[in-house]
Length: 267
Image (cartoon, rainbow, N blue to C red; front, side, top):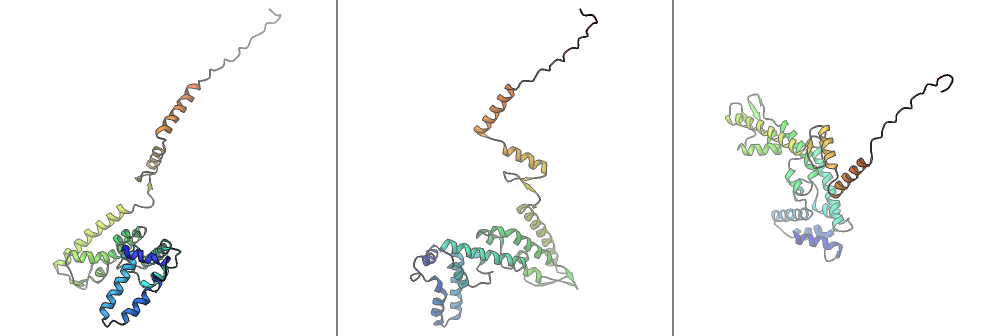
């Protein structure tokens, strides 16, 4: 992979020696001569995976409906490798965000996004996956339960694999359906708890040390504690404060002048 990155970077120094902009045209001419269609498709997929891997977004090679050549053309519009890479990753992040909004998330995994540096998209994706899983709850209707929707859900497929169920429909009296429903309820609770722990509510305040405050008073106390000067500054502050207190003495109350009563006729 490192060698591929270096070859792609060479485009900005010598386009003739590293014709990245013509990569797919060169491969197309070469593969047209091949009679093995399966081998050609496999090689195209390998090149596509290599391009996505070089840009540190291998998890998006499968779910994104965009050609490898389009990715390269976007890349070479950058002033250099770093700029081009940034442009491509930004564009792909927008596409993924649109896919999450439209619930086209069957092939997108939170772990893959996290690994490839798209962690900021994980909360929305996790919420969308959870909603799909809730809507796919196996319910008995007319004597059987359809598992088709559950099998199309990312989390549902995981549950079905764990329960070793390959069918898309189970009769009401099947013991596997009872076990599946129990496992579904348990899994749903675990998912909701995991999501709450991973993504706290936005209304909660966070202290400077990263801890979540239970209420506003706790947040204010933590903020004051964290904002207290430390080290030399702390000692200096305490010294100035104590000196000022020593200099400032309480003022004595002045006595009111007594009123003298003058006697008539003088002394």
